[in-house]
Length: 267
Image (cartoon, rainbow, N blue to C red; front, side):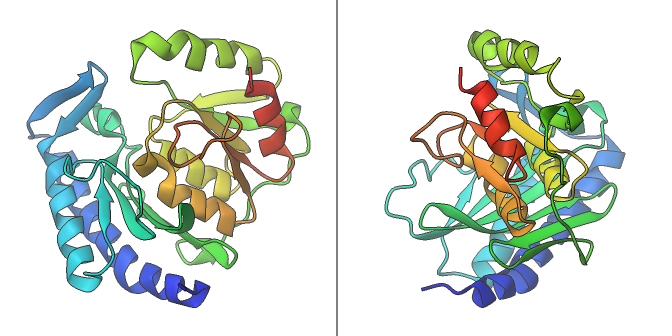
């Protein structure tokens, strides 16, 4: 069995160096503004050659330092199933690609360590601000080495909440516009950052009170949800009897706000 202490060692000695190396690459290429762009599933779902460079760099570091732990990477089309994988790294080499392409600074490197289908540890790095988030469930979470905790809001009216827009235009009405309209007058305000990993880390640090989104992928959330759990927060699927990592819907906040958001959004 993987212990919490072993998970912290993997974070500090393997995941942090990989995230920092990839972040340095992203920051350099972000300011150069010279990269090829391709479209994936739709006009908002893009991949750049920098996504792939970052993926290759992270994979080389993880495989070199932890060869026995499989890697599930957004840009790796070979691994498509999660069945029977007890322990794995889940990697988003560039979360917030659309922001990156348009010159917005809200993008991250996100690495998660998932054990038996649940987030155990995570590292998320915001290279432009040089903000490094890390955390281990049941142990703690940190931003640039200082311990962080989720906020202490007790009602939705106190909350600054993050969300995101689904790539698929066919579900935007049901999975963005309708929930947004439902919540916009119940919370203090809603923010769209364009990086689910970054927004979730802001929940962990108390900068956002909560977060919700539909139609997400495991690499969007695996790392940051572990950081929220380490910071004393709660992460739930919006839809009952599903997984917030593998089934696409997520709501996060403290132990009061996350269930309140879930109740409002379970429509």
